[in-house]
Length: 179
Length: 335
Image (cartoon, rainbow over all chains, first blue to last red; front, side, top):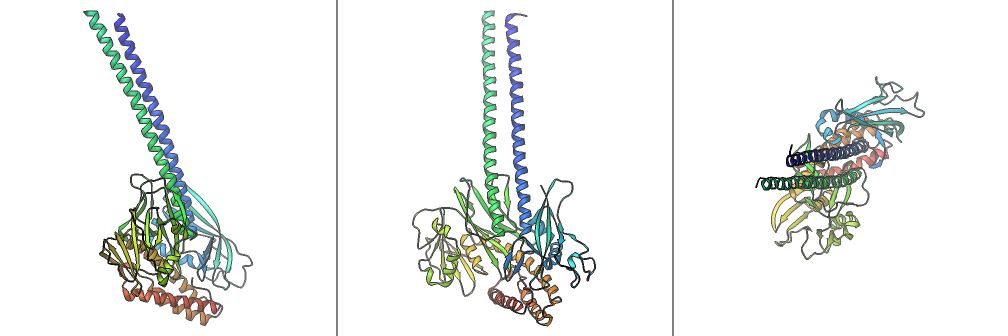
């Protein structure tokens, strides 16, 4: 091989190697940026999930009030069944509002609740049951299966407005949101 | 001659090499810069949207004072338009048009102008209690927007009430002003109570017609449309909104929410009618009285007219009285 040819081959190899290096650098960089964007999207979705959970906690359909004086972190038991019925009648609206989420309510503790009064119907299997027999109930389920989701558990007061002043029990509002 | 040709080939090749290498290096750096600026823009958008969403959700929950959110002169747009329907709300969002992420507002009433470009945005909310709490109206405004109330606002009780309901922060920022504002500005709207000014130099004007509970929208002195308002919070909505279409779109969303609330409260009422251990006859009677009142609130914005609005206002008072009666008789309150 002549000196000139050798130089030409050498230059070609250098270009080729240089080209490969640039391609590798570009792909590493674009992968890194793609990951960064993905992380941002996940962050945003997680934040959205938190917002949905907060929205459910404060929805006017379930909130506790006495002459419009509202109590925070509180769910009125007597509004639960009508709300469940309304969501069944108009699921598209509530899916729009609460996205892909599932909401459950759990009766945990009712101080000095025994004997004279039956438990609220929403938490019993048979009317007249003295103690709650179905302690956890799903309010609605718009969650899509198979995807990752976050669970938020909020401690809430459960207001029983059959009596005045209302009785307050302790419960959990469990919100699962797809992210 | 041959050597010369070889030398030429080598020189040409070297130049081609330099060109290709240079082009590749430049391409790489251009791409890095381009991607980086896109990422930065996306990051900024996401951060702003996060802050905005925090505020929007926060205001849905509680109606505290006005908040400020920095939006770094991004071209925010607010849309609320048809089609609207009871099942999925309206086609409504807040965001940057070219950005992927938007805040969907299909069911939440948000009153603002369409183009929100400024370094910061003001947000405040007011509860729409009809009389029971139904939703929070969210109002957005940016510096450069001028919402002009009449000079003699204090002498008109409704004008005074509406003006007082707007947080001081927006008055201090000279967004909500009394009198007039001379000079160019992003968006200017005059609010009149009672009679149309007849001034066709005014870009936008709304006239609140209290006896008929109507709002008349004018643009450059030309009448555009009449809409209805139910409670003062809706008047503030008309003040902060772009035009009659966005006002009507947001009111439709509010009435969809109201219908859902009525259904839930009716369910509760039916239950309470049969379950009032304190004074069963008295409580039952008042819970029964509430039934026809509540059913009147089961209405759509599009079906409003002057007698209907009048009726809604009367029934609001009746429902408040019934609720007070329930409390007086040691029964559970309706709301």
